[in-house]
Amino acid sequence: MRVERVGLYGATVALEIAGARIARIAPMPGPADWQALPLPVDPHLHLDKTFLWPRARPAAPGLFPAIEATLADRADWTPEDIRARAGRALAEAAGAGMGALRTHVDWVEPGVPLAWDVLGEMAADAPVTLQRAPLLPVDLLGDPDHGPPIAAHVAATGDGVLGAFLYRHAGYPELLARVFRLAADHGLRLDFHVDEGLEPEAQGLNEIIRLTARHGMEGRVLCGHACSLSVRPEAEVARVLDAMARAGVALCVLPATNLWLQDGAPGRTPRLRGLAPLHEARAAGVSVMLGADNVADPFYPFGSYDPLETLRLASTAAHLDPADWLDAITTAPARALGLPAPAIAPGAPADLLLVEGADWQDALRRAARRRIIRQGAETQAKESVPA
Ligand SMILES: [Zn+2]
Figure 1: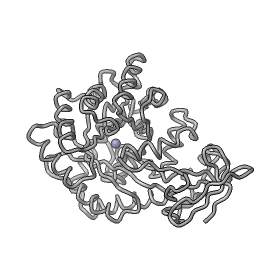
Figure 2: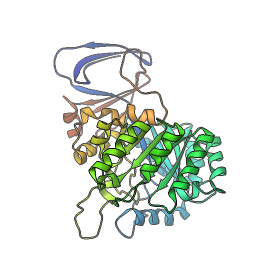
Figure 3: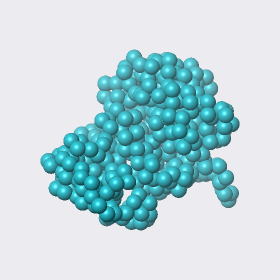
């Protein structure tokens, strides 16, 4: 297969594909008709609660009413219900050209949640690589009695990652110390929902950075949200980001959910949008990536399993040039998930997403056609990017 007039990192090329690999990349004169990137990776989704909207609606704006609405709905979850909702999500992700994803799985009691097993079964024949990260309140995972058996179960049945929700919990340094010890003992990566709020004193991230350095877990710890960095003093944020880069803690920014949940009050326009300082983080040397987070659930009623839509929203919300941030939906999340870093290069797997457009602004602006190539074979793409 030969694809001509492809825009690749600003140049126009022809791609030659032989079997499941890229055989040759040749320069071509003239403008590009297609923009290319490796199949994108979403490092932060929630397939267990996706598509609960509209049956579960929060009673008020903000993070905690969304948590309450989800907890209330859990009583109705069955394997069939989870399979139907998560299956729809996987079909959307595959149709958008996603290559791999990490889904968090709510784990709110000591026992193994139903969705953990159901999503584990679905991973075997999922159309995209599916990795599960358990999402436990830090006081459950850090509990000296409950934490160890949960971590052992995750190590035995999971995908190499342990995860927790941390937000101004009393005594969190001690809880986190136990969580890190569990991860180190079992050789697990860590993935946190941390400081998802607008209080400058929400500083769980600082402790995560300290413990990552102490345990030598560089490149194995991912932090999602870190919204409080958007309101902490600038000099303090600069110190945190510098320490984060040195410790090798990665940052996942989740614009849709932050824009929807932060600074919410009925009848009032939000002033603070809760986005972690991603330009500053990347400039400091932190690995920065983007995720869709919640799709059609009590945390966010909109959203899609299309990483290009996530990139477009992030570009608007955080003033990104999308062409400079393609790594945030490809190589950076792949590394965070422990997957081989995807590349478009001779000899690399022919796993590509092609989007019609003269450049990335043009490609993301409109409902552009796309072509998905998996292992050298073209697969069915959905018609368009949602407008
Ligand atoms: Zn999340």
